[in-house]
Image (cartoon, rainbow, N blue to C red; front, top):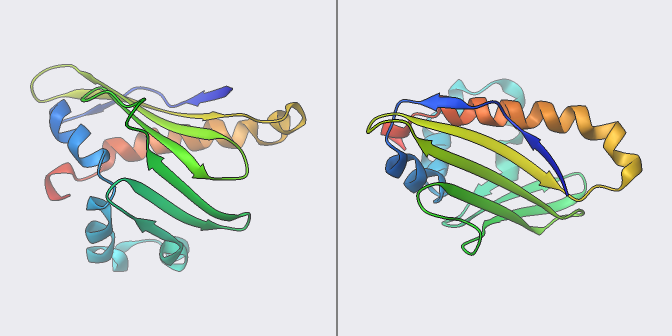
Length: 147
């Protein structure tokens, strides 16, 4: 399995709060609806293709529906959240590693783990690496107080 990781990002919240919010994707639905008008045009055009449930994220993609579900067996509170592709053309996981730095600071690293055929690695590896980095940065910018 190939792994693409973000850089470590510092989040100014305690690890329990972050874990609680990220392990329950449904908290994002209300935040997105409340701020839909502030999203870039491209994001607004595609936001209806994403739905958030209590333990999953579903995305309508050109390859068909993609569902990522919290994997309770691989997730370890409050340090590791694993989303596993329940419906996807390739096997993959989205992993969020959290490390408490202090009572009010947490480091996070996001990674994408995929089973890619060898010939695809060269074609999509750079995009997946960039995607993992942007996902890690996005985690650090989330308004955890308002989720």
